[in-house]
Length: 86
Image 1 (tube, rainbow, N blue to C red):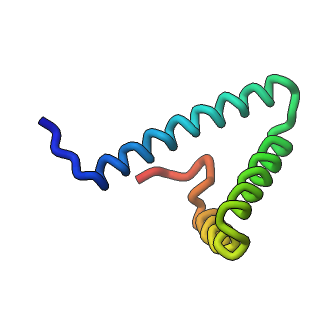
Image 2 (image 1 turned 30 degrees about the vertical axis):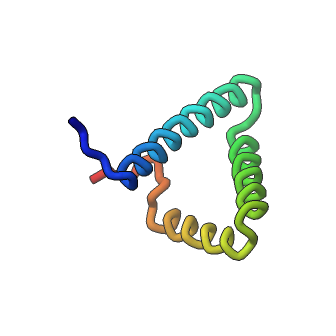
């Protein structure tokens, strides 16, 4: 019998939702590329849509903090395609 605490189960649910969301985004991205939309346009509109929704839900201050964290992650190379996983 598997003994999962409530927080463990919540973490698993969030992880599953994130995986499904990634799959949705990948499908939409592939459809856009297939329809002749450039990757730069897809990326910019995805970021704009996400930031708009986050500001609506959490406010500008919280979103600016998130963007600062994302900037640091970019600077540390987390999003490089050629980065080595350890």
